[in-house]
Every structure is written in structure tokens, then in C-alpha cells.
Length: 100
Image 1 (cartoon, rainbow, N blue to C red):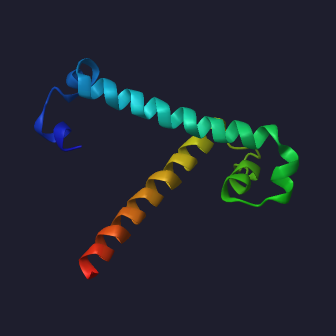
Image 2: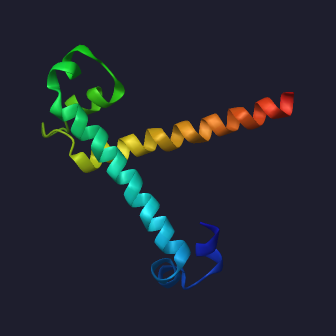
Image 3: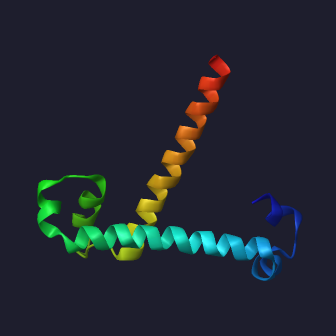
């Protein structure tokens, strides 16, 4: 994020640098990981009925027009939980080390 403020050509450097390539690869990996989770949930509907996890709740949710969430929306939800979990876990570890 800081690079975007300091570098007025950040879009160009994001597309044509090694750092940008690595970032795109990591984002693609995370998207594939999330889509695989969704695919596994959809392929086993019987397990989903017995198991009430947060993804299952979102998969059964509907918009106001009664359309179910798309795979892209579900992917964004999964990534949001992964990132939020990582950040809170990292903060707990830092706090724990400070207290020791």
C-alpha cells in the first residue's frame, strides 16, 4: 500500500516487476484455494446438511432478490476470514511475547 502513495507509476510497476508478478501469483494461489473449498462443499451436499459451518451458512444465504451468493462472493468471504484470522493470530502472538 505504501508503494502506491510513494510511486506515481505503481500500476506500471505492479504489472512489469518481479514483485508484482509474485503478488499476482500469490493472489491466484489464494483464489484457487478458496474456490477448491467451495467446490468441495458443493460436491458433498449431504455433509453440508449435517454440518453447520460458516461457509455453509453463507452458501445457503440469499440476496434480497432471492439469488444465492456467487462463487466469487463466497471466495471473497473465505479470503476475508483467512486474512482476518491471520491478522488476529499474529496480534495475539506479538502480545503474548510482550507479556513474557
